[in-house]
Length: 456
Ligand code: UD1
Ligand code: CA
Image (tube, rainbow, N blue to C red):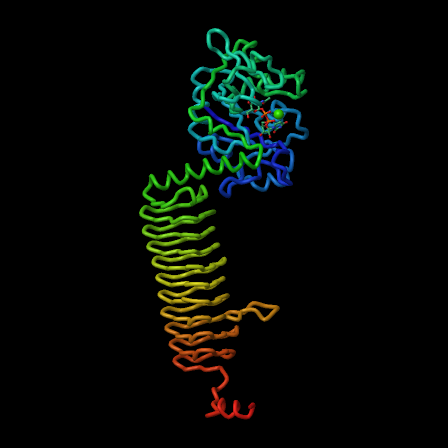
């Protein structure tokens, strides 16, 4: 049977106290709404409609490969689903309705909810959860035979109804052929004057259709984000889930509580991750590498057997055996070839450091191409910016640059050249040459003693 998902993402989320709409806030680098859309896609839905409204100009750019539907006014959850009617015109099958602010929902639960409805040919299958403190949630009212009769919202509940601890988690699978017909029968005569999606349950029963319920095994899956505290809670749960997955796959973590890994990061077995490490975006780590402590990598590819110690790396590449840090900053376009090194207090931007080449201490390398087997002495700096334009530096193979050298770009240093320490190099250096660009040392013998005597 075909399956579609409708993700509700039109709400404002006032309790977030944010200029950003709630569903645009992120858990481990991924917006809330994308977590839900991805879970639906992983559960194999054939099409996904996202209902946007509040702050839609900030939500829509986050979404790819979905159909956007717009809810013009926030009149309630039934009205929000009704906004997807046009997008689903002609669709036949199961329609899953998912809250866009519940990032912890799993594809497995979505799949089971859909299966339950389809097996029973029910009008709706809903996800419920047993909570110690049900306050604020819709309550599941069951008949004596145990079947679900209706859902009562907190604000409409009698004291007896409010005492029920089984709650509506806010995830549903509907019979698509029946859903929009039932929505047309929902009215807003309730405490909040809203059109409640939950009323479809009673409407289904009145129409003689079955309603089935699936109790969530793990109620944390249904955690909805309404505040920054809940955002932090959800992030913590997701952190544990992701770290567990990597550890199960052969990654060592000294202190998993202090390691934060985004959902799309790929890590090979026998990688060791040390404390205070964050790996985000499209980052990947090859086997036997050691990452951290105190390291943040975003969109960075790390090969096998690398050591990445106290490093911030953004959109960079470290090939097999490369090392960085402690205290290295690799900015976009930094590329360390095999066994290359960016050492302590070294910043590299948009530059390639060739195979086995070393930038061990206190350097800035920008817009440079460095060959193989090169050593840049401590404090070497590529002066790539003249205040208006950026200029390139090209360094050949086997070049040795003495400490505290300024390479004023544009400049090219030929293969096997040697630059004396403290040089300011403003002109190209030919291969194999010794280049010096510094004031000649002078000496005045006995000067100190005679100077002191004069002063007496
Ligand atoms: C809803 C359920 C409640 C359930 C709870 C679970 C209803 C009437 N009640 O309550 O039974 O226990 O979820 O979390 O459905 N939204 C829109 N447009 C609207 C209104 C809401 O897009 O006009 C979106 C919100 O952005 C949110 C979702 O729908 O993502 C749920 O809405 P919310 O107002 O938070 O529902 P609750 O009152 O929490
Ligand atoms: Ca509400």
